[in-house]
Image (cartoon, rainbow, N blue to C red; front, top):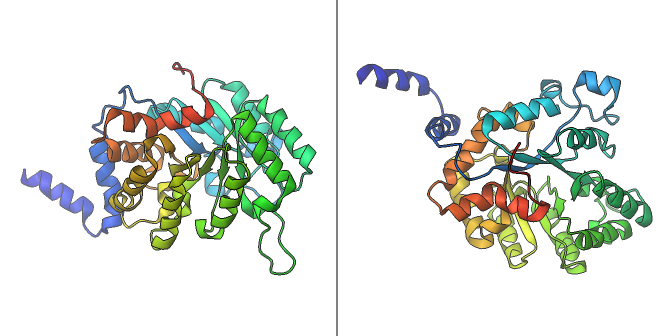
Length: 330
C-alpha cells in the first residue's frame, strides 16, 4: 500500500489541479465499459490531406497550410485509427479551412467510407445567391448533410472594418432558408465569442424559424464571461437551436470538473440532452494531453450518472436526429 501511494504521489508531484485532472479522469474512465449500447457519433471534427496527398491531388488553400505539428495527424486514415481505438461509430466531418471551399478531400473521405462519415460544407460568402444555392444542392448529392457559416469569411465593412452580418447577405439568407427545406442544419462558428454574433444569430432565426441552428464548441462562451453564457442560455427558448459539447480544451477551464459544473450541467438543464451533442474537434485535440480517446472518456464520465436516454442523446442520438443515422455496422 505504501509503495502504491508513493508512486502516485511522485506522479502528481508539482502538477497543478488543471494539469492532473485530465489524467485522473482518464484513469478513472478507462474502467468504463466502452462496448456499451450507447453509440458514439462525433459531431465535430476535421480532416485534411497529409503532405503527400496535398502534393499529389488535394492542395491546401493558399496561406491555409495546417501547422507542421498536425500536418499528418489530420488525414482520414489517422482519424479512422483514433475512432476505432475509441469505439466511435461515425463522424460528421466539418469542412476545414485548410482546403477552404475545395471540398474534394472530404468528398473522397465520404466516398471511401460512406458508413463512417457525413459532411458539413463550408458556405462561400463570395458566391451569388443562385450559385450559392446551386453549390449547396450539388454537395448534398455528395454526402453533405449540413452547412457551416464562418462569420469571419464574410466581407468587411468599409466604415469600421467589422465583418458584415451573416443575416444581411442575400446569398447567405437564401442558403439558410434552403437548408430548412432540405432539413440541413446550419452550424455557426463564433470563434471570437458568441456576444459578437448574438444579434446576427437572432436575425437568422427570425428570417427562417424552420432552420436548425448549431453553435460550435459550447457557443464559444468563455468561462470568464458569464454574461456571454447567459446569452447562450437565452437562446434555449428557440427549439431549433442546438449546442455542441465539443473542443473541451478551447474553453480553457481550470479543470474538466469546472467545465462540467459551469457549462455542461446548465446547458443540460436549459436545452435538454436532445439539443446537445458530443464532438472532439479532431485533429486539434491530438495536441492535448487527453487526445481523442481521453476526450471521449471525459464526456462519457460526465454523463455516467445520468439516465441512459441522456447519455444516448448527447453521445450520438442528437447528432443522428439532425443529420440522419449512421449504419450500425462499421
